[in-house]
Image 1 (cartoon, rainbow, N blue to C red):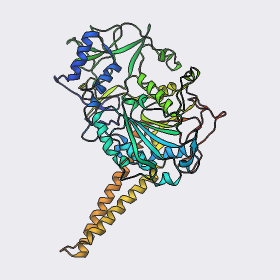
Image 2: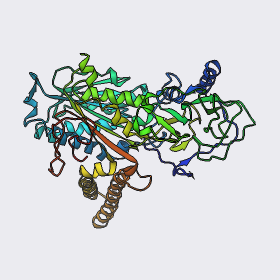
Image 3: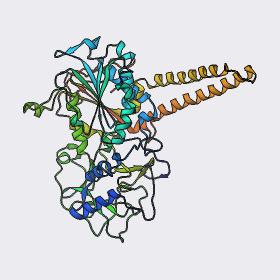
Image 4: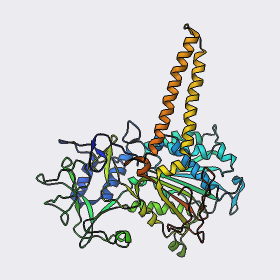
Length: 530
């Protein structure tokens, strides 16, 4: 759930990896996994990921804070505040299209309009804090944005929940009341998105942000064979005499055969430096309705592997229910729909509008590792298939899907350059004020010489700070081969009627469809800057 950059050994996959040689100690979770395999047989990759990331005692996300220089990765909100601020600007620009002036007094179904913020995988709470600073600030009050009344955070980690509470305490304190919110804000934590109430008919509009969340949801891996789709499973590695092809890149590789497979000869293996676990194929083909009925996968050749996340599909549908004002068409017909006040959503993650075959990988100490490296002590991740996310909500006629577009295009369109320039000027000016204050202090040195030295030093500090501000922002829009601006994609969702919005330059954001309906079809109305 993070931007993962490695810097040591370059491989053919255009990322770097940590190579491990010699024996290594077995982790407690690895022992649990091996015991399970010995008792019941190979397990799906999704089960392996769930154990590694979410085991209540030994799971990676349950044990502490993995973020920052001292952790395993750094996310965009930790790089620069501009990221969250521009996301808030997008929410405001889209909301303005359907909320009348003086929105605090506007009503829906007899209820005053209000907002709530939902974040999936909130890390330390930095992104929510940056978004709230704009949504509850003077700008929001000036344009009549409805007040923010609550925040809902989907987070399993007790350690991260504590940090989120600390980060957001200024919004929950009765002393520091945000200008455009109830006092204090209500903040609730949930283990799963389905635990968030839908807010039936109370006029609450939901704003959802999921930054680097979907990449850590469990995946299953399937390989197409002559007789159908076989599932790639995680098995114990038991033969010490197996020849494994050279694969310094780690992860899933091809060309290996094993004396003990769960079925047909597997084309998947784990590297030689991780001998306890390996990939095998299921003995028989498995029914995979999502692949067998989707035209995207109909003509794939034998031997093709597909990473597919059922968890992502379920989460996407839950997200659509939160912001879409109701359920899918089949649920409406059955009379089981749940209604909400509508809303907007943003999904930001690395991936593309296509499936991936071998993006599953581990991450530890800011370096990519084999997914079998230190189970429970390493993060696990896979690229996001945004086309599958679109497919997941195509039966929600009350939800519009926009994008995906590159992160660079999104941030630049929302005013990144202007905001960064303003922060840079402020940094230099602040250092200038500090230098003036310091130079007027009593000193035994010559006043003129002392003043000049202090001013020069502090201005240089200000210049360095302004340069750091720019460098951090530019990382987010780097469109190099593996740059964040190109690798990360942004997809938006809006409820029916929220199908337009002005950009920060005042440009129109509606490209009206023939009937104003929503969905994932090409006829959906556009939403700036998508």
